[in-house]
Image (cartoon, rainbow over all chains, first blue to last red; front, side, top):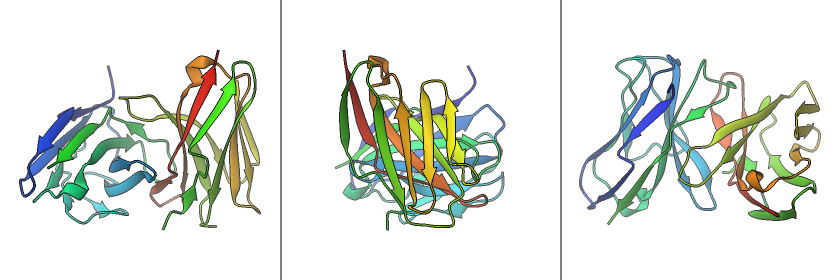
Length: 113
Length: 111
């Protein structure tokens, strides 16, 4: 089934540890995104990539990094996790970026203790 | 700085009646607006959209209205069904910009 696969589904992580959230899409979409969902704040953009080889910062990029080595994969790395990064993380893709609708994965629930 | 606001965290309606979900935005450069629906333990899914050159877009039971002068849009669901119970997110974007989301409204449709 075509779509976005995120891994892991959930994770408990000690503060200070490094963590990479994985995201793979098989729709050959050019643009990919990482959002975090927090109660009362909705979905906030962390980083994005309009095409393979390029990345950009969103609303809340601090403490996170991304890479886009190829079209399909867009991993999100927390170099040194802090409790405020406890959230549900969604990866998304779209055909062209901008106003084209986003396709979301099912999310990774991350708890930093 | 929340550029897209959904001021009602929750809404409850009776099956068969109309559901109206509201959204306000502050950035006049937004030119495309979307609604997403989210069930628990799943990612949001695209529902309906509207371009800023229109004031209404309809798709089956779902209609989105845009009032640019008021920087306001709304989603109407008629008739509401229990399967419509979900969290609805309003989103806005510029043609070459990223997409901003509201905080969401939890809709409950009672049988």
